[in-house]
Every structure is written in C-alpha cells, then in structure tokens.
Image 1 (tube, helix red, strand yellow):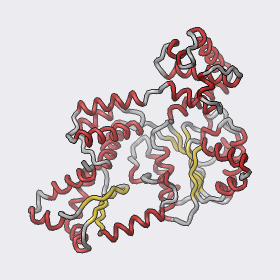
Image 2 (image 1 turned 90 degrees about the vertical axis):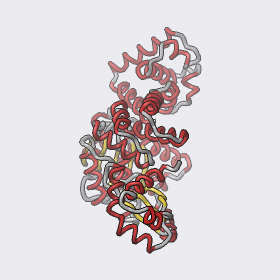
Image 3 (image 1 turned 120 degrees about the vertical axis):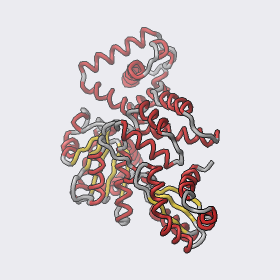
Image 4 (image 1 turned 180 degrees about the vertical axis):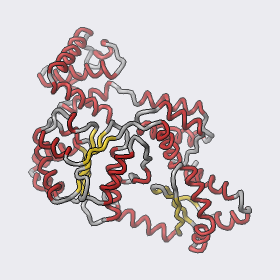
Amino acid sequence: MNSLNDIWSEVLRVLSRTLTPTAITTWFSDCEPVEIDGSCLILKTTSVFKRDIITSRFGETIRAVLSDIFSSDFNFQVLTEEELSRRRSQEEKNSILPEMAGYTFDRFIVGSSNKFAHAAAVAVAEHPGETYNPLFIYGNSGLGKTHLLLSIGQYIHEHSPEKKIEYIKGDEFTNQMVKSIKEGTAEEFRTRYRNVDLFLVDDIQFIAGKERTQNEFFHTFNNIYEAGHQIVITSDRPPMEMALLDDRLRTRFEGGLMADIQPPDLETRMAIIRNKAAQLGLMLSDEAIEMIAEKITSNIRQLEGAIKALTAFKEILDRVITLDDVNTVINKIVVDYNVQPDRIIRETARFFGLKEEDLRGQNRSKNTALARQIAMYLMRTLTNLTLNEIGSEFEDRNHATVLSSIRKIEDLIKTDPKMASVIRDITSNINSN
C-alpha cells in the first residue's frame, strides 16, 4: 500500500462530504500525490485548467485536512507533468550536499525543550555571519542537533545558492586531515575547508584530545571567522565539559552563542510522532500515539524508528495498526537500542586507532591492553552481561581477569581526570552510533 495514497484518501474522504461523486471524479480522478516536500504535499494533475480549479476552489479545505493530519501548518502544490519535470530538474541542480536532503526548519517540531536552539538556528540562517557566530548547539544524541545544523545549510543554500557550504563530522575531519598528509594534499584540504561561506561541523567532541586535529581545526576556524563567514557546531556537551579540548578552541566556541537541546516533553513527543507518521502516510490513533510517547521518552531517533517500523508493519500486513502491534514494535525498538557488546568493542577500538580483533585477541601491547580493559569496564556499566559473559567476548578470558580489569579502570577514573574524559567520549560515541 502506498502511504502517500493513505493521506490523499483522507483528503478525498473529507472533500466527498460536500462534493458529489461526479465532482470528485471530474476534478480528482487523475490527480495523484507525488511526494511530501517539507510541509507541502506535491500533487500531479493532467492540465493547467484542473490545477487552477483544484487550487482555487478546494485549496482551503485541502490545507485544513492536511494541517489536521500533520498537527502543524501544511500546504499543497498542484503541478502538471511538465511542471513536475522542471521541478525535479531544478532539485537535482540545487542538490549540492546530499546530507541536507529532508532537513528543513518546517520539519522540525518546536517545543519548550528546543525552542531557544531553534530560534537561534533560524536567526543564523537568515543572517549568516552577522550574529551568533559561532553558533554552538549541544545536547544528548538523538535530540535534533543535526537536523537544525543541516536546516541552516538548506535554508542558506536555497536563498543564496552562490554561497559555498561545507559539512563535516568531527571524526571525519580527523580522517581527511590524516589522509591529506599521507597523500601530500594538505594544501587542498586546507583550501577546501578554510575558504567557505558556511562551515557546518557535527559532533565536534570527536576531535578533543587529538592534538594535530585540534591545531588544524583552530586555524580553519580562525580563517573562516576572520573572513566574517558563519560557523555552526554541534556537540553532545558544552565546551567546558570537554576535558581534553584545547583551551584555544574552548575560548572560541564559548565566544559565540551556546544553545542546548533537552529531551522533549510528552506534548512535544506526541507532536513529533503525529508529524513523522503523517510524513510516511501512517494514520495512528491518539491512544497509539500516547503509548509510544510514554514509553520512548528521551530520543527522537527512537521515536522515528518506531514510526518507520510501524509503517513497514502496516504495509506488509495491509491492515490497521492495533495497540498490540504498537506495543510489540516499541518493545523491539527499545531492545534494538540497547548497547550491544560488539558496538562497545568497535567504538573502543576506533577511539584508540586499533582493530576489533586486537581487543578481542591476545595482543598485549600497553595501548591495546588499556583499550581492552576499558571495553570490559564499559560492558559492565552499559550492559547486563555477567563477568563470565564479558570474558567470552575476549577469547574466553576468565572471571578474575575481567574483574581485575574493571577495578583498574574504576581506580583510574577516580585518580586521573583524563581517564574519566576518555570513558565519557567513548560512551558518547557508543550512544551516537
């Protein structure tokens, strides 16, 4: 079943209350939904005449039905085949950053927990480089930081397509820098990121503790800032809580506007669920929406995962979603988002620049041994695994070895601030991936 058709069927159902079957057939028999673009439903019809009639005579009703379905202001646009082709050609021409696709301000549900960050992002998008530079948005994983970051990029590109925009994640900045040094292309790397109108950096916490990366980023930041161009940064915490962050960078980050995002309240979660469901053509009862909002409380990404799972559930079974279906999907989502041992080993190895088999195996180098002990400690704190089950993840190391490793890391956390920061960074990486 096509989910877009579900939305359009609801619109036609409401229209049929006041229109005769003949009128419905005359104006809407060859009108079909094509896509949802932000807060706008795109429809296709066969002629300019029909396009104009649908828009002028039935526009108010259609907008009202769509706004009710999406729980927010919603519009529609009717295009002929020729107009639709031109639109798609223009979209391809304008698509410079695939990461920005689908991220717009009108798709961001605003609530008390994110109102300030949203307002700051809109202000920066409307007046880049003039105020709030840099804009530093922080909050836990899955709350919408990246959505705001990319919405800024999308807005600026739409209104000033000549501006050069670059988007990168903190860890990817490190990877590209190292690669450029190895390949002798460091100058090209610097030119790419220093000569931009808008620099979007996601998860900046990944560069903390990496001396060469921080030094390169410092000079990149300065070049862009001194040129009067806009910088927007996201992180899972404020700069003052990054123990391994270079003081020069901390000062610059804190010199702009800092905006935090908190977990959404119940009302906002329900609005998010209703909107995301409608985007996918999924019509949920108020009871189902409330059930999801009450059980998934701190992560928007999990809410979206639940809606996508329910959409697939509905299309596969081709029937109305029941509360039992909702409960089944929610329980699976919660389990899927629990931390798995493989993820802990993968992110710990990545943090130390090692291979996963190094941690699991018998390599006894000092760096590997410490990383292995940290992975064991994280398994103990982030999962419900027993000591023996943790040991089985590392070529069947025994109970005593695992316990000794955990206690060593616990002692280091108490005495060494850098170790506490390392644990926090790796935990953040685990929760972000």
